[in-house]
Length: 236
Image (cartoon, rainbow, N blue to C red; front, top):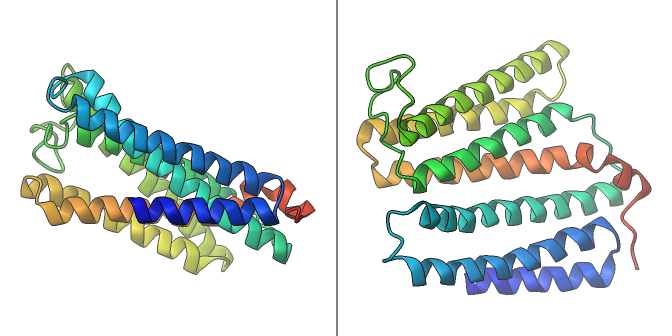
Protein backbone atom coordinates (compact mmCIF):
# COMPACT_ATOMS: atom_id res chain seq x y z
CA UNK A 1 0.00 0.00 0.00
CA UNK A 2 2.84 2.40 0.90
CA UNK A 3 4.67 1.62 -2.36
CA UNK A 4 1.46 2.16 -4.34
CA UNK A 5 0.98 5.51 -2.65
CA UNK A 6 4.53 6.58 -3.52
CA UNK A 7 4.00 5.69 -7.18
CA UNK A 8 0.69 7.56 -7.29
CA UNK A 9 2.20 10.69 -5.71
CA UNK A 10 5.13 10.56 -8.14
CA UNK A 11 2.78 10.15 -11.12
CA UNK A 12 0.64 13.06 -9.92
CA UNK A 13 3.67 15.33 -9.64
CA UNK A 14 4.80 14.38 -13.15
CA UNK A 15 1.35 15.05 -14.63
CA UNK A 16 1.04 18.41 -12.87
CA UNK A 17 4.44 19.44 -14.21
CA UNK A 18 3.71 18.46 -17.80
CA UNK A 19 -0.04 18.76 -18.41
CA UNK A 20 -3.03 20.97 -17.78
CA UNK A 21 -6.75 20.29 -17.91
CA UNK A 22 -8.28 16.84 -17.47
CA UNK A 23 -5.04 14.96 -16.61
CA UNK A 24 -4.52 17.30 -13.66
CA UNK A 25 -8.10 16.96 -12.46
CA UNK A 26 -7.98 13.17 -12.69
CA UNK A 27 -4.66 12.67 -10.93
CA UNK A 28 -5.57 15.33 -8.37
CA UNK A 29 -8.72 13.35 -7.67
CA UNK A 30 -6.65 10.18 -7.35
CA UNK A 31 -4.39 11.83 -4.78
CA UNK A 32 -7.38 13.03 -2.75
CA UNK A 33 -8.93 9.57 -2.92
CA UNK A 34 -5.64 8.00 -1.82
CA UNK A 35 -5.71 9.98 1.41
CA UNK A 36 -9.40 9.21 1.84
CA UNK A 37 -8.61 5.51 1.42
CA UNK A 38 -5.92 5.67 4.08
CA UNK A 39 -8.35 7.43 6.41
CA UNK A 40 -11.06 4.84 5.78
CA UNK A 41 -8.54 2.05 6.36
CA UNK A 42 -7.80 3.50 9.78
CA UNK A 43 -11.52 3.76 10.54
CA UNK A 44 -11.96 0.08 9.59
CA UNK A 45 -9.23 -1.00 12.02
CA UNK A 46 -10.62 1.12 14.86
CA UNK A 47 -14.26 0.08 14.39
CA UNK A 48 -13.72 -3.59 13.51
CA UNK A 49 -14.90 -5.02 16.84
CA UNK A 50 -17.82 -2.80 17.91
CA UNK A 51 -19.34 -2.59 14.42
CA UNK A 52 -18.71 -6.18 13.34
CA UNK A 53 -22.28 -6.92 12.25
CA UNK A 54 -23.66 -3.46 11.67
CA UNK A 55 -24.78 -1.73 8.49
CA UNK A 56 -22.37 1.08 9.32
CA UNK A 57 -19.40 -1.28 9.23
CA UNK A 58 -20.55 -2.74 5.90
CA UNK A 59 -20.73 0.79 4.49
CA UNK A 60 -17.28 1.67 5.85
CA UNK A 61 -15.55 -1.47 4.56
CA UNK A 62 -17.32 -1.26 1.20
CA UNK A 63 -16.42 2.40 0.76
CA UNK A 64 -12.74 1.55 1.19
CA UNK A 65 -12.88 -0.81 -1.79
CA UNK A 66 -15.13 1.53 -3.77
CA UNK A 67 -12.43 4.19 -3.44
CA UNK A 68 -9.99 1.68 -4.95
CA UNK A 69 -12.23 1.21 -8.00
CA UNK A 70 -12.39 4.97 -8.57
CA UNK A 71 -8.62 5.32 -8.18
CA UNK A 72 -8.03 2.58 -10.75
CA UNK A 73 -10.54 4.14 -13.16
CA UNK A 74 -9.06 7.64 -12.84
CA UNK A 75 -5.52 6.35 -13.39
CA UNK A 76 -6.56 4.42 -16.50
CA UNK A 77 -8.50 7.44 -17.79
CA UNK A 78 -5.44 9.65 -17.28
CA UNK A 79 -3.14 7.26 -19.14
CA UNK A 80 -5.49 6.82 -22.10
CA UNK A 81 -6.35 10.53 -22.22
CA UNK A 82 -2.68 11.50 -22.52
CA UNK A 83 -1.90 8.75 -25.05
CA UNK A 84 -4.97 9.52 -27.15
CA UNK A 85 -4.35 13.26 -27.10
CA UNK A 86 -0.73 12.89 -28.21
CA UNK A 87 -1.81 10.60 -31.07
CA UNK A 88 -4.99 12.61 -31.87
CA UNK A 89 -6.81 9.31 -31.46
CA UNK A 90 -10.57 9.27 -31.84
CA UNK A 91 -13.07 6.63 -30.84
CA UNK A 92 -16.65 5.77 -31.58
CA UNK A 93 -16.67 3.44 -28.61
CA UNK A 94 -20.17 3.93 -27.28
CA UNK A 95 -20.28 0.15 -26.79
CA UNK A 96 -17.23 0.25 -24.52
CA UNK A 97 -18.60 3.23 -22.59
CA UNK A 98 -21.90 1.46 -21.95
CA UNK A 99 -20.19 -1.80 -21.00
CA UNK A 100 -17.87 0.08 -18.65
CA UNK A 101 -20.86 1.67 -16.91
CA UNK A 102 -22.62 -1.69 -16.57
CA UNK A 103 -19.51 -3.48 -15.30
CA UNK A 104 -18.74 -0.70 -12.84
CA UNK A 105 -22.23 -0.94 -11.36
CA UNK A 106 -21.83 -4.72 -11.21
CA UNK A 107 -18.51 -4.36 -9.38
CA UNK A 108 -20.09 -2.00 -6.85
CA UNK A 109 -22.96 -4.43 -6.25
CA UNK A 110 -20.42 -7.24 -5.87
CA UNK A 111 -18.54 -5.28 -3.22
CA UNK A 112 -21.74 -4.76 -1.24
CA UNK A 113 -22.63 -8.44 -1.63
CA UNK A 114 -19.21 -9.50 -0.38
CA UNK A 115 -19.08 -7.26 2.69
CA UNK A 116 -22.80 -7.43 3.35
CA UNK A 117 -22.53 -11.17 3.95
CA UNK A 118 -24.70 -12.04 0.95
CA UNK A 119 -22.21 -14.18 -0.98
CA UNK A 120 -23.90 -17.45 -0.01
CA UNK A 121 -27.42 -16.07 0.42
CA UNK A 122 -28.20 -18.25 -2.61
CA UNK A 123 -26.01 -21.34 -2.12
CA UNK A 124 -27.21 -23.03 -5.30
CA UNK A 125 -26.99 -22.34 -9.05
CA UNK A 126 -28.65 -21.70 -11.46
CA UNK A 127 -31.58 -21.53 -9.03
CA UNK A 128 -31.55 -19.32 -5.95
CA UNK A 129 -32.64 -21.19 -2.83
CA UNK A 130 -34.35 -23.70 -5.09
CA UNK A 131 -36.36 -21.04 -6.94
CA UNK A 132 -35.97 -19.30 -10.26
CA UNK A 133 -37.03 -16.04 -8.59
CA UNK A 134 -36.51 -16.32 -4.81
CA UNK A 135 -38.35 -14.54 -2.06
CA UNK A 136 -36.74 -11.13 -1.66
CA UNK A 137 -37.84 -10.54 1.93
CA UNK A 138 -34.28 -10.85 3.21
CA UNK A 139 -31.84 -8.12 2.20
CA UNK A 140 -28.97 -10.55 1.63
CA UNK A 141 -31.00 -12.68 -0.78
CA UNK A 142 -32.19 -9.57 -2.64
CA UNK A 143 -28.60 -8.32 -2.97
CA UNK A 144 -27.32 -11.68 -4.18
CA UNK A 145 -30.12 -12.06 -6.71
CA UNK A 146 -29.58 -8.49 -7.96
CA UNK A 147 -25.91 -9.34 -8.50
CA UNK A 148 -26.90 -12.35 -10.60
CA UNK A 149 -29.38 -10.36 -12.65
CA UNK A 150 -26.80 -7.65 -13.29
CA UNK A 151 -24.30 -10.29 -14.38
CA UNK A 152 -26.85 -11.54 -16.90
CA UNK A 153 -27.39 -8.00 -18.21
CA UNK A 154 -23.62 -7.53 -18.62
CA UNK A 155 -23.28 -10.85 -20.45
CA UNK A 156 -26.17 -10.15 -22.82
CA UNK A 157 -24.96 -6.62 -23.61
CA UNK A 158 -21.41 -7.86 -24.24
CA UNK A 159 -22.64 -10.73 -26.43
CA UNK A 160 -24.80 -8.35 -28.49
CA UNK A 161 -21.93 -5.92 -29.07
CA UNK A 162 -19.60 -8.80 -29.96
CA UNK A 163 -22.14 -10.15 -32.45
CA UNK A 164 -22.45 -6.71 -34.04
CA UNK A 165 -18.66 -6.39 -34.27
CA UNK A 166 -18.48 -9.85 -35.83
CA UNK A 167 -20.98 -8.85 -38.50
CA UNK A 168 -19.26 -5.55 -39.25
CA UNK A 169 -15.76 -7.10 -39.05
CA UNK A 170 -14.68 -4.24 -36.77
CA UNK A 171 -13.09 -4.46 -33.34
CA UNK A 172 -13.68 -8.21 -33.09
CA UNK A 173 -10.55 -8.74 -31.00
CA UNK A 174 -11.36 -6.08 -28.40
CA UNK A 175 -14.95 -7.13 -27.82
CA UNK A 176 -13.95 -10.80 -28.03
CA UNK A 177 -11.53 -10.23 -25.15
CA UNK A 178 -14.24 -8.38 -23.25
CA UNK A 179 -16.65 -11.28 -23.69
CA UNK A 180 -13.97 -13.75 -22.58
CA UNK A 181 -13.34 -11.75 -19.40
CA UNK A 182 -17.08 -11.46 -18.70
CA UNK A 183 -17.50 -15.24 -19.06
CA UNK A 184 -14.43 -15.91 -16.89
CA UNK A 185 -15.70 -13.64 -14.13
CA UNK A 186 -19.10 -15.33 -14.24
CA UNK A 187 -17.50 -18.79 -14.04
CA UNK A 188 -15.42 -17.76 -11.03
CA UNK A 189 -18.50 -16.23 -9.40
CA UNK A 190 -20.51 -19.43 -9.82
CA UNK A 191 -17.53 -21.42 -8.54
CA UNK A 192 -17.49 -19.31 -5.36
CA UNK A 193 -21.09 -20.24 -4.65
CA UNK A 194 -20.81 -23.94 -5.48
CA UNK A 195 -17.52 -24.33 -3.57
CA UNK A 196 -18.76 -22.55 -0.45
CA UNK A 197 -16.42 -19.55 -0.90
CA UNK A 198 -13.18 -21.32 -1.86
CA UNK A 199 -10.52 -18.60 -1.45
CA UNK A 200 -8.76 -19.00 -4.85
CA UNK A 201 -12.09 -18.53 -6.63
CA UNK A 202 -12.79 -15.39 -4.58
CA UNK A 203 -9.40 -13.95 -5.54
CA UNK A 204 -9.81 -14.84 -9.21
CA UNK A 205 -13.34 -13.43 -9.32
CA UNK A 206 -12.23 -10.11 -7.84
CA UNK A 207 -9.07 -9.88 -9.94
CA UNK A 208 -10.97 -10.62 -13.16
CA UNK A 209 -13.58 -8.01 -12.27
CA UNK A 210 -10.96 -5.30 -11.74
CA UNK A 211 -9.12 -6.34 -14.90
CA UNK A 212 -12.35 -6.17 -16.90
CA UNK A 213 -13.26 -2.80 -15.42
CA UNK A 214 -9.80 -1.38 -16.11
CA UNK A 215 -9.76 -2.68 -19.67
CA UNK A 216 -13.18 -1.20 -20.43
CA UNK A 217 -12.17 2.12 -18.85
CA UNK A 218 -9.12 2.20 -21.12
CA UNK A 219 -11.21 1.46 -24.21
CA UNK A 220 -14.01 3.86 -23.24
CA UNK A 221 -11.81 6.85 -22.39
CA UNK A 222 -11.42 8.21 -25.98
CA UNK A 223 -15.21 8.21 -26.33
CA UNK A 224 -15.87 9.71 -22.89
CA UNK A 225 -13.24 12.43 -23.34
CA UNK A 226 -13.48 12.84 -27.12
CA UNK A 227 -13.88 16.62 -27.00
CA UNK A 228 -10.86 17.15 -24.79
CA UNK A 229 -8.80 14.60 -26.72
CA UNK A 230 -9.68 16.27 -30.01
CA UNK A 231 -8.28 19.54 -28.68
CA UNK A 232 -5.31 17.71 -27.22
CA UNK A 233 -3.97 17.51 -23.68
CA UNK A 234 -2.59 20.90 -22.87
CA UNK A 235 1.10 20.67 -22.10
CA UNK A 236 2.96 23.25 -20.10
